[in-house]
Image (cartoon, rainbow, N blue to C red; front, side, top):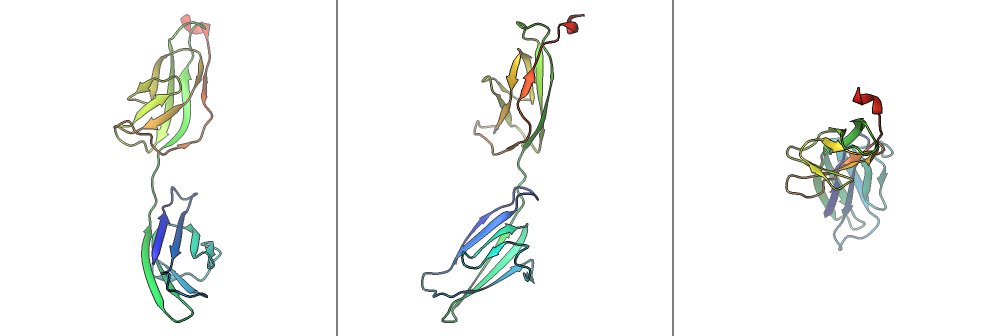
Length: 172
């Protein structure tokens, strides 16, 4: 049996399990889902669809899927749904520039679960090794996370981009 698993990103975004029985199997199918050695009796909690043989609300754990066809052929598969930690951009903070033409502002991004060695690609094309952009001018800033080898990372971006303004009183 072919089983495809999409792991959960976090508690709010559950995993998905979809399985395809062998071509020789004949409908109708009888399916039993087991989660961590306990048969699933509340199919709505796991959003189980027997016609598509999938569970769309799979929380982390070990799943066993038993499929029996109309001719009493049976196949069984086990799979694990893991929780994947992805970086999350939580917020931005900054220090305004002192004049509309100066480049003395600073923008900082607050990131949870950033992998070691990741870099920050800012909207203006600058790449930094730290989650801080120094010498920023007035404007709107956001960042993309890239891996240490330069590949874009999957991440969640929660806040709106940061608007860096001007505060001439900072000259004093």
